Image 1: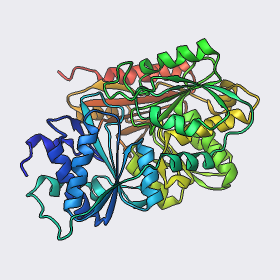
Image 2 (image 1 turned 30 degrees about the horizontal axis):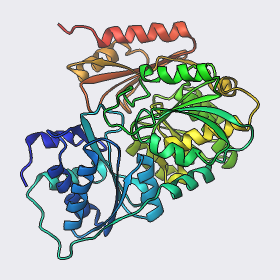
Image 3 (image 1 turned 135 degrees about the horizontal axis):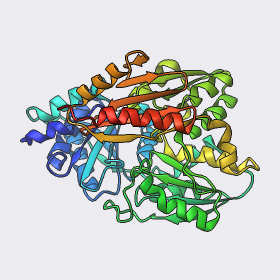
Amino acid sequence: MDHSPLSAAAFKAYDVRGTVPDQINEPLAHAVGRAFVAVTGAASVVVGHDMRPSSPGLAAAFAEGATRAGADVVMIGLCSTDGLYFASGHLARPGVMFTASHNPAQYNGIKMCREFAQPIGMETGLAEIRDLALGPALPDADRIGEITHLDVLPAYADHLRSLAPVTGRRLNVVVDAGNGMAGHTAPAVLGTLDLAVTEMYYDLDGTFPNHEANPIDPDNLRDLQGKVRETGADIGLAFDGDADRCFLVDELGDLVDPSALTALIAARELARNPGSTVIHNLITSRAVPEIVTELGGRPVRTRVGHSFIKAQMAQTDAVFGGEHSGHFYFRDFWRADSGMLAALHALSALAGSDLPLSQLLAPYRRYVASGEINSEVADQEAATARIAAAYADYDLDHLDGLTVSAQQWWFNVRASNTEPLLRLNAEGADEATMVAVRDAVLSLIRKDPS
């Protein structure tokens, strides 16, 4: 099968992602389907997709390729990424999700896992899948697989509610689905709970007519903040395009630091599983490992990215893992991430408390963070080396990019896997400290090398 030279560019560190149709197209999806079966040895594969216009066709092409390679395919149709992970765990099958998550409308992508939602990244099978997919066409198997269809949404909703029951006072909740897959999953999960839900942008629309489905960008949360203030809601929930990430807005309309939610969920999981390990990535607040330790748990620091966190969770039998990007991972959910389960934990904690969300989270907010700041940089390596030289007298760590630590502050600079960007996260003991560090590092990042 003939492939554009650009096809190889779509294979990233832990998924396939690119623009349609030049980097991601149905011939490539078909080839990946054949390669996926060859590499995983799967007898049956579960396939889901998001609401992007290109997703159904890509999923169908993958399914055809997989059946040609001899595997049966269970098509679960429209779903969130955590819905696909649920199906992989619930059905004990490798899974494939067609989505570009929070990326703009012209993108699509392929997220893959082995049975029980075990991640596939470049070091765990994706390189082999890439090489086979971009090589000579694989022959048909002796037996062509069959395609069946299954609706897993009710079972998914039941499972999530069983892991974080919401009881207590009745909450007023605003949910911004961003025209993404939460518009499909939120009614199923939240609809049977005693909640007053105000729905925003529930229509599935892969062109994202209201705002990009990327809640890590504060601009995309302004509508939710306004609606929370307007309605006097107790909490606001925002999901990204494939609904595997969740961000919160408190009753004041203020954004909730994802590290505070990480610490809250960690506290809940440690209460149920004393002494357990909790994973946190290296750009979460220092408050997270401090609180985990104070509660008798064992914090383990890891690099950014779901495949790395899932692998670390498996190695340590961690009960929970949190990323500052709004990804939250649960041992009871096959170590996979679920934005909806994180939302249920927040709702459960809030409904069981007399406090407003801002006060409930106050103990978990100890420092001031910059948030992630992206800078377009032609030579990321040179910029990082410039920063390392400037901070040579401090504690330097190269686990993922460059982390520089001092008693009153720390920052991390790392290169994007998908774009010519350097990402900066800084944290300080107070606002002035954080701002000083942030601005000093940004000046180094954006310095003209000439």
